[in-house]
Amino acid sequence: MTLYLITVTILTCTPAYAWYPPYPTQSRLPGTSADPVIGQNQLYKVRAGDTLVELAPKAGLGFLALLRANPGADPWLLPTGGTVLLPYAFLLPPGIQPGITVNLAEMRLYYLWRETHGTHVRVYPVGIGRSGWDTPEGKFEITRKIVDPAWNPPASLRRENPQLPSRIPPGADNPLGEYWLGLSRDGYGIHGTNKPYGVGRRISHGCLRLYPADIRDLFARVETGTAVYIINRPLKFAHRDNRLFMEVHRPQEADSEALYREALEQVARMPWRGTINLEAIRREIALGRGVPTLVGGE
Image 1 (cartoon, one colour):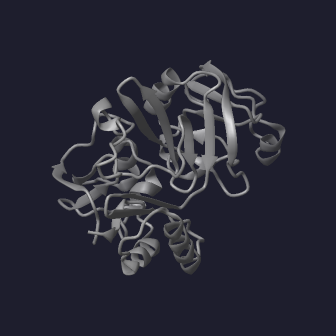
Image 2: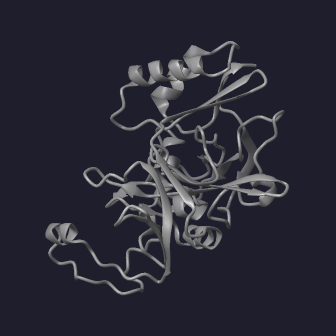
């Protein structure tokens, strides 16, 4: 049981969309008889001069997600004519509810909404807080929506960087980008960026950075009062019929044995009584590819 749901399509150009799944029919959550894997991975054919650093924003993926999905790849030196896996397939975070859910471990933001004909999800890669400026976990809500926000660096940042002005007006030099969704925790928000290469990395001072096209799309979809859940779950499981799937977003400093024990505990709490491929679970934890993989059943 190895990598699951890779399309056979070899892409020679990157997708035109930023978020994924790109179309409403693909974003609808699967029914009770369908596999719980949403979206499809794709293979990209490397052209001369391609790098993972430049490919990530073109493909609408976070840099670290792209790097993890391609173990051993040199992010600056890709073999021309080779292939790169674009990890568009995913499992939903556990207990996801309508509104916004951010899973820090995978550096993805999920927007879940209900329509007459079903429930839909849209996924956006995010940049999160770096060490010492961790993005807070918990339940929040959107309290403000601002177009073309100005940025007033807090005193703590100005002490760290005395060159920072007290106010940066809207424009190309503003690190907040064109849109700001303020959270109910003062000083934190979801926003765009003037440095898209930071999306999908631990690079911010605690806020959540989206690609410009993604924040533009999300901003138009959410209202003040929208719930925001920020979690940190490196392991995700889902099952349907007699298939068990696993997705691992392993932190760099994580202990493999601790994650393995946690994985078995999570499975034990699930209503799953089929066979389990323990070797596949260990392998995925060791690699931490962030790709849905069949680890139990057929």
